[in-house]
Image (cartoon, rainbow, N blue to C red):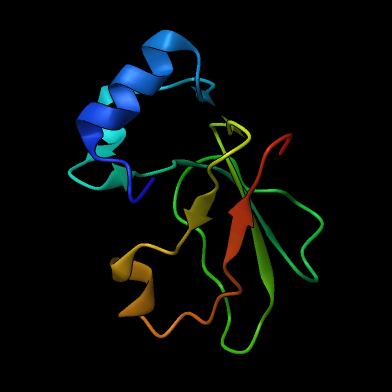
Length: 102
């Protein structure tokens, strides 16, 4: 199976083949689903940000968790990428994939 289209994602969700908790149709794109940010933790700041604007100093590591949790079937995986708006702001990221049981 190749990249899941928005239609494939909806069909897979309806049949239970994949799962996306707290799913929102607004997150669907023609070739994927945009996860929403739930929290941002900035290294050196003990307060976890859950709303508003977060300022991240240059060269500072930060962690992002998502609203959604993704459940994959045994024969597919999800590629998790940073939105291009973040890339254009020169954010460096380590991408990951979600496999069965993730």
